[in-house]
Image (cartoon, rainbow over all chains, first blue to last red; front, side, top):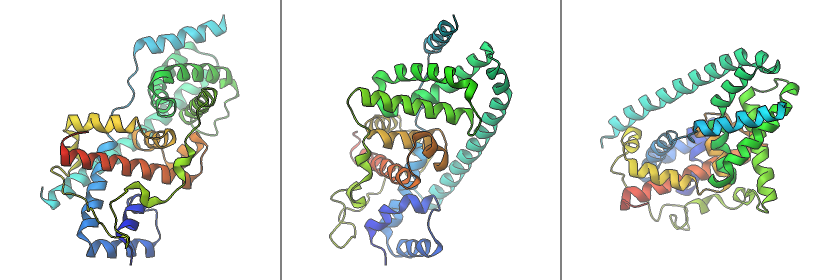
Amino acid sequence: MLKCHQIVDQSSDYLEHDMSFRQRLQFRMHLLMCHNCRRFIRQFKAAIQMTKSLSKAAVSQAQLDVVRRRIEALDE
Amino acid sequence: MNVGRVRASYAIFSLGLVIETYQKNSQTEAFEADLLPMLIQGDKASFNRMVEAYYGPMLGLARSIVGMAIADEVVQEAWLSMYKALPSFEGRSSLKTWILRITANEAKSRLRRESRHVSLDAITGGETDMMPGRFQDNGHWSVPPSAWHDEGPDALLTNLEMGDCIQYSLNRLPELQQAVFTLKELEGYSFEELCNILEISASNARVLLHRARICLYSKIEHFQESGEC
């Protein structure tokens, strides 16, 4: 029987489907019996989805122009 | 919030992200197939299109390794290195993967020159240390997860203050954790591709990603409980 801390340790593998059938079965057995871990997995999934939408680095035209100028200088 | 509604919201949100990633990958392949022959002939306009398309992902990766202050310099140097190496590009990976690998190497070299080291130590140590004080000696929760006010990803996204807090926390993760997180979660790379870019093993990449996720999860939990970052 898995312990709660093992559920936390293996939670990314579970969500990425990166575990054997046997490991997945053990994981799900624990979830059936533990409401704290069910809540953790539900909220962990939501957190992952939310963080995927964090903003990417913004780029200004000035930054692009610097690259172009430096590349042109290499060719001269 | 109703658990059924949260699940439905999560499923729709996940499907949207999968479709978006698939479309992005197809667009990248088509873009590069169009661009590459012209680039190798030294066409300036094609090079400028590439700069516009890939400067952002390069900057995101460089920031995750060297920090905001010198990321731009690193990206500039990476472009110069890439321009010189372009005639020898063999197409073993996508152009974008190749460029990001050059950026990652440039950033790591810069860190070494600055007498800092890439924090590979983050890979070692016990997994349970990721949530210190949350478990009893018998491995069960001593401080179980609290119920969040908003559990759906859409609801979490609409909380702008929390978004700022998570962005702030992401910028403070150890370098390699940030780099793996940026490539996997923000740029949508597979483990195989990001291991190729960062030159780390798949097992290390998985540990680093999991640690980054748990850290950000803990920040969201803290924000949900206290309303503070």
